[in-house]
Image (cartoon, rainbow, N blue to C red; front, side, top):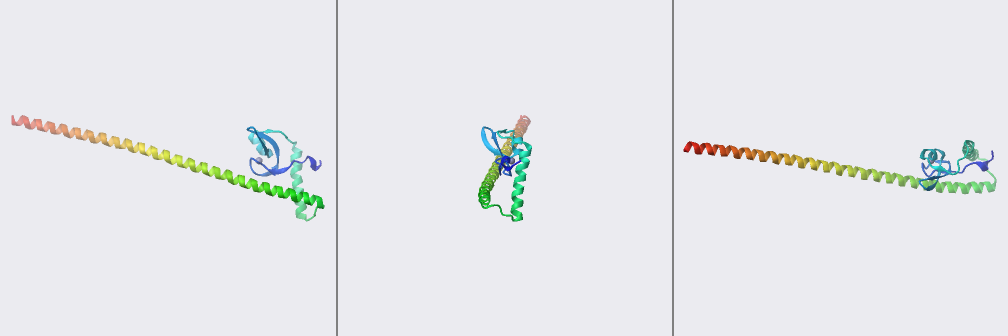
Length: 164
Ligand SMILES: [Zn+2]
């Protein structure tokens, strides 16, 4: 199989990993996704390649890096193409890094908002509890006062009866 059938390696827009990408549609949005993400998210894949195509594209990138490691320089045109591809990859990696950061930041902000909300709810609950405790306390005080009043009344009456 030639390299023409190989898939384009890029950054998956879902997991930000470097992988062979497929065109897929998720929630009405067109995305470039890796095989795993397209399957996990249940996205509608427009170009579902055969397994050997996935394998070949991975093999292709491995071949590329092996060539780089071994120091065998490709032809000038190839070199230029490779360089351009690398620049694009570098840009994509940078974009992916920023997206990842943004996602992380959004996640953190959400978590913080959730914590704040939790604290407010907890506080409110405590306030309600405090209020109830206070009401109970007032009720008890009122009862005590009533008892004292009744006792005084009783004593007064007893005193009056004695004096009669
Ligand atoms: Zn992915």
